[in-house]
Image (cartoon, rainbow, N blue to C red; front, side, top):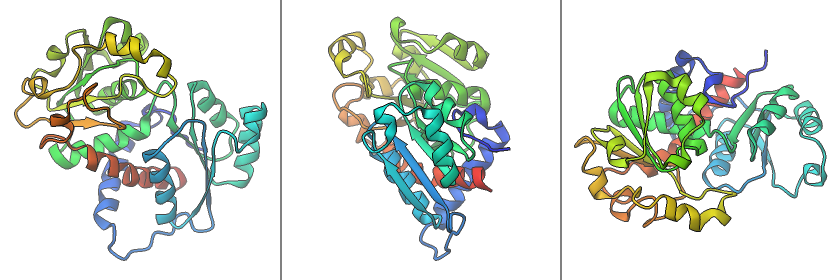
Length: 300
């Protein structure tokens, strides 16, 4: 049966742990002279309907390091821009390629691609979830703090963002507590919170979410497709900036993550993202290693 990766829930907790450990192994082996050949004579097709820096580079480099080749399609490069259905596109592309990476808007486009594809489909970002980011984030936590079980994680900002909603999935799977500090109008989907049970709590007071946290996470307040809402969102998230005062309420050895791009002076202060508690640069690099491990898992 073809395996897809549309949300973290497409993995079992044991499989998720295996992928993270494999990613760490691959990272340690980087530059050691061992040639990876999993994708020899195989092709990855990347269909990106939204712009990207880290996701595109990490997947294309991952493909190269695994011995394969990649084809990149931007919004105007495929017939989908002229109305061809995603189901037809999936059938055609999967008859020629070995794996598909889709970065898009509505999550149902990802599920439609997977439904009609003969090969694995990876969600490289949808409006609802960003599971590849979470692989890198979990790997980064492992490297700095070890196992996530019983850790305390705080997410501050837009609780309805794809990153936060993927953190909710991770909390239930990895058995840590997630405390979300978000304005009342920017809360995650209630079904996700209910499914996470006692592992997820909500508050509109960011200081409450951060109190005693081992990890503090934030994301941009106005993501792709939300540019017209920027003024409204800046007003709504006033008081939610992760600054040094907020970090002082976390555990003394707390670390800070951000999926990037970051806007200093908005969701995060420069002294935090550029300070000693920040692990964002290693977090960004880990996109490469985590995704290599994911590709191995899906194609093995």
